[in-house]
Image (cartoon, rainbow, N blue to C red; front, side, top):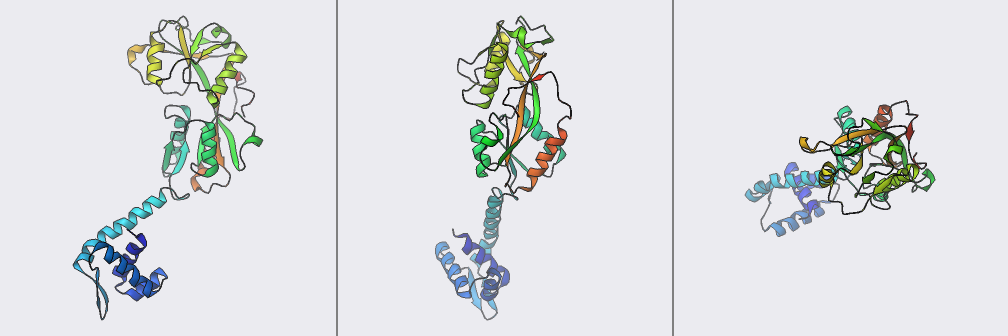
Length: 309
């Protein structure tokens, strides 16, 4: 159905005259008549009866009017859902159980008036491409390339350093430890089947393993976090790495242990990525919130890859 014709029908119904509706729509009276005639032909009914005083709705016109108004409201909602400045702020958080989702929840708590559309893209390349084209407004990612290698107009700033923790089952050799050093993990098998070559998180853990001589095993299909936790919980030899803010949903009897890693503490560098020409009014509020919420002090004992910025 031609929504221009529907809008014209509503304008005539509200004005009561073809001429006045034409003036309201900034078109000719002939164009109004043509649109109404086309709509009537499509519906197979008469919508107006012309009188000396103007145009009066027929019974069918009266029945159609509320539905016509709803069609126009639906059109406006559909346009608003994708129109920068009117649609929700669309932000990529990688995963809904990870630290970026918590950062975004913190922003929502501080700015409940901002409508959010939370998405999860696969990797930094996909996220940066979506930011560049305006498909999304911002993304939380570890940025592995220098600023000059980002596409034109794309910017990034570090917003959160998340400590990495060791996760073991209750029978693991290190399960009773309150903290370990990276050196103490040498020789232990750290299983991370979710690492995908070429992604920013794989780059981070590759550099971590190389720096401290760790054995990170990415072999095997990744069926999701729950099956991974099942395996770790039952194993006396396997451990894995998780972010300090990663939400683990598991039965209480799993007995999983989160163990801090110190001296130095590996931290995962989360950055916010956006396009400098993005017009969404809430984007500045998000950046300002993240900058103000980030601690002023930096852990001198922290380790990040050389590419982190």
